[in-house]
Image (tube, rainbow, N blue to C red; front, top):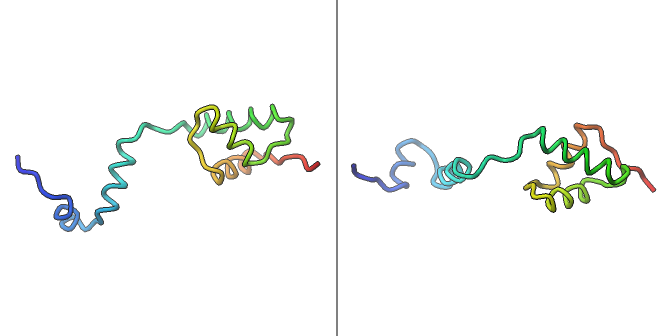
Length: 88
């Protein structure tokens, strides 16, 4: 079987090379934690902090526990779960 260069294949299907490699990277990486796992972990960390942690501190704790997550996703999860930190 003959292999073709990625650039030519992308041109034929009308995709960009960077888009192809992005798709390939997403396809080959291990699956992320499920949304439910992240919600549970976020809720647990927030409760353990006596409702004092905001999204930055919650994210830091999630990273320590091995979750790969960004600050804005934590913020979205906290908003979805109705978690608002106490203001001192």
